[in-house]
Length: 208
Ligand code: AP5
Image (cartoon, rainbow, N blue to C red; front, side, top):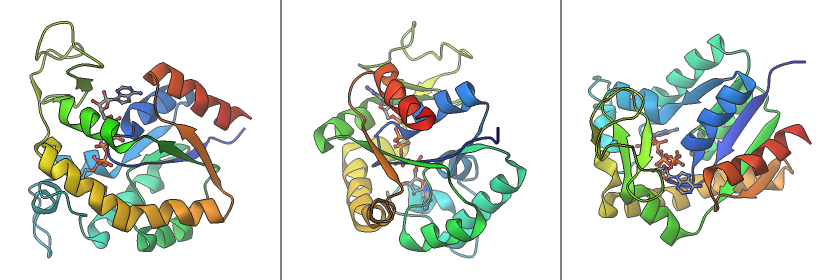
């Protein structure tokens, strides 16, 4: 059987990263995430400025920078779960020239829940593991269960920047979701419920 090629779509805070990690473990897939790749290179100088300048404002990083990350990651991947890309129609077109997809899954989550998830998220400064002050607490406050690193708030997870990211999502990325929906290629699942419950929905989509 060939390895799965899965795309996860949804607004900021929908749980794409959370579910991508589970899918990657379950099906032995590469987790390709432009957000993490950009965070690791926030201060890299490009002809457009640094990625961090766009990210901390909640805006999209210019397409050529992001496309390059995706091309390099796809080259090395057999099966993959792609999270955070494509975020506009130009990126979607670029992606369709680079690879085919077996599944595109959209997570539906209401906006008030998204804001609560984003503003309450904490991430490990060392290994990047995700937590939430209410929904996914570490055993010891502010300490990563996995590596003992310090848990911090992402700079773009303040309420003001989270709302700007949602605005950018509606303007740029909702047309991408519509594009896959119109092509009949989109499976839509509820992103509410516990991470385990959401994962069951996703697994149903992948296996049926
Ligand atoms: P990126 O890192 O991709 O952020 P995002 O898309 O805004 O997504 P998030 O990581 O915020 O949310 P998620 O859906 O992964 O949710 P998560 O699982 O973490 O992008 C950041 C920035 O990089 C962008 O703003 C942009 O500047 C730039 N960028 C990235 N890709 C780009 C591209 N292609 N083009 C241009 N620029 C790009 O969950 C969120 C929280 O909720 C966590 O605390 C988690 O514990 C909790 N949670 C998850 N699931 C559940 C659940 N079922 N119940 C309760 N809590 C839950």
